[in-house]
Length: 235
Image (cartoon, rainbow, N blue to C red; front, side):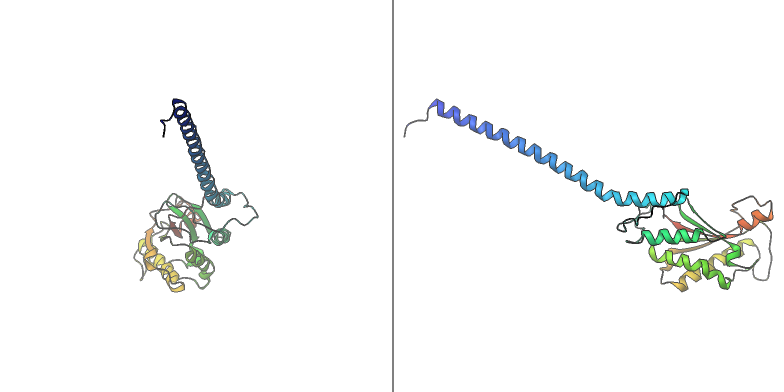
């Protein structure tokens, strides 16, 4: 066989260079395509949560929610690791919170620590008593429904006004407030199969008033049981 000519060698080199250039272009296009696909997927996964958060934000700001039913998949983000609203429970939770907030003597607010549900003493107890009224179930059963849709811890706080008490059962407001929070905790435990580790009962007595104790109206607002769903954020 004869030796390849210089012309043939140059032609072969040129073909290799052209092929190498094409491969570079193909690799670059593939990379751009993959980046585009990644951003499309990331956007699609975030849309549902954005819509859910907007729905709850509208509720707490007083803006009527949209009539469309939002997607029910995924969890509402929370700052507390391991705690979330159970899958497919967004709409039930929203409806329960909305119903609870319309009950006279109940208020719902979003705090930095979690969702607060404030229940007036008049709905739960007689004056100076820690025994639940027979009709206390009207509001407490709605909270029971919320417990079934979440796995957050719930702190049950008893609060009183600053009027001193001294009875055969309770030496002071602090003891009364603790007894009331325990009564509510026992009610939840008896009505559900909730993990007792999720329930925290605490009494503050008159130490954390919502309003200055300077009138009977203010004192009546300070006498309450406050439920804090720790880590639950709806807006």
